[in-house]
Length: 297
Length: 122
Image (spheres, each protein chain N blue to C red):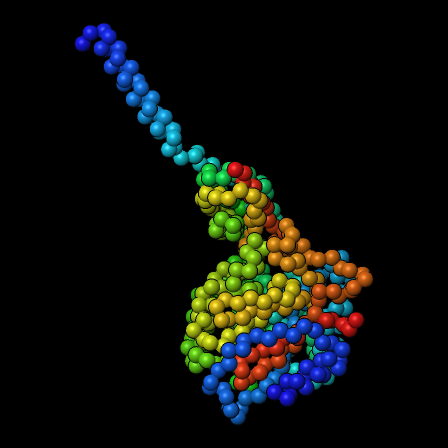
């Protein structure tokens, strides 16, 4: 645990400290004392919308670069960086889509951390079923393991109907069947798996099926994007945490008639934007989330 | 049967029929409403659907161009709208107020603005 405190100290020393949110304190038996496991932290960035232009962000071409610089400035490098979709802003021109994906790739190549993972959002993938995304970043759903934690990336955007789809759900079921019930599982997805606010299309049509598959597992945490704001919700014992955007914030669900972006505030530029560091306490299967701004101030 | 008896009998039948008619009126279901809604990138016509609480409605949904969705979560109603076909959704608006419906199939650059309202009055 000493190492955990050190990390929070370095965040504070860097002047980046934000609200810390603890998630998943249930703990588990099988990990205790396992020699191969260690605490670690990763960074989640989301909804960068490279290619967007408009009044909600007068620095649309600079914000992602500032975020990359902020991640590089962390005193201790994260084990990996995860982008949870909407890397690029929608375009109906396939060539422009690829141009934006290429520019995005080149900008994030400046991250010092080279273990960087990607998944698509609907802006990247829904108009071509993920074809262009896959050309640049590979599979849209996959798993990986890191220091005892099993990470599952679920694609709920390549089908424009906001469906995970039966085929991927079967893949998910087969993957989960290999794990102990108390395995430490983290799910990355773009849209919320639960019906957060379907009136603004903030849902996954068959997300309940994924949650049903996950529920028998006692230590599951979901990190997602899409809604351009921090939000925390639980379905049973499963915690769901949405991340801020790096282009413009969206309103609180149902707080206004339309989901229009919140206006840019010249007095507080980049307000509502940011990224997060997630510190895993592997033995407790818990996650401390610290929200960080794009730039100090 | 004398004339008086015959008149009383006719009156009784008339009253019975009137009562039956009144009874029928009392339990009649409200007339169902059918409204055509046309979708195109990136709007619906009409984009304001006015309904009366308790009166069943069938929406006949068509699209002029690409596959669209119609989702009215407050009434647990949705449909895929396929070009060349008419999709029908039927529901009974069980609450008054203004409710949002949206396209829930990602259809292009204006998808996120493709929405309308259902206005239900008592």
